Image 1: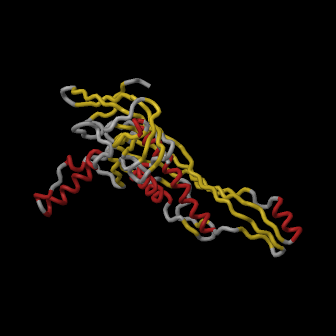
Image 2: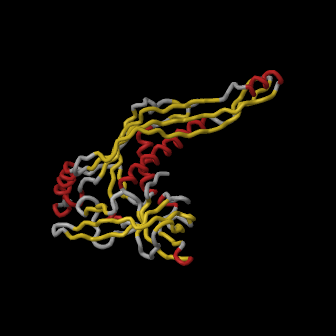
Length: 311
């Protein structure tokens, strides 16, 4: 890793008037438009597991991705796209009703980034039923066998920069949910524990798993940052303003970052240098955790950055 890297460009990411903030204010947060995912799996509108239906899997997945992005606390998230054409249309409507109500183009810029993709496949696999337990059960009159339901959702996704057209990442990934149930066998036949509704509901868990894998790719591009609030135990531990609402878990590694402001005359950029590493020892609540020093020095007011984070 290079010691010095350019982290923020004011014109490209967010307007930072002073030292980079830890928990970004809304006007400093990156804006992301999450498009409805195309359902190329063919599952939308179909009946799953005895009538438990999926209304619109592409729209549902959009909501999972939006909620996961919002849970990080790092982004402003939208499900509608602001375009120059839509802005002009709004202005024409406003001018027809109230000339003073027209909207300035700068107030309705395109969102900085777009996440879009497709649901490729939704699949259900059952393993383990009809095994030795069921055979013995049929012979003795009572018995059973464990069964594993595996629900998978495969998606393709890409994230692009609206202003430059650059694709930040393009991935194919799979979300998964496993549920163990039990097949009970008597002399009247076999019956599985667990309802069809539970299996249908597991599609939601698989979508959520896939959404958080996408967040991992997003946060590789835009890492979560926080601030060391207080140093304790003679510099061995410190409290940081990041918690469960940012997806922080015990054992996560945080980089300790120092910033250098460089005035280029026409814009200001910030260069960042990694000066240490700390490890999350305890997640206290939604917005706080306790970290232990691994490398470098813990200083009050220092910026920390999650190295890489998914769910």
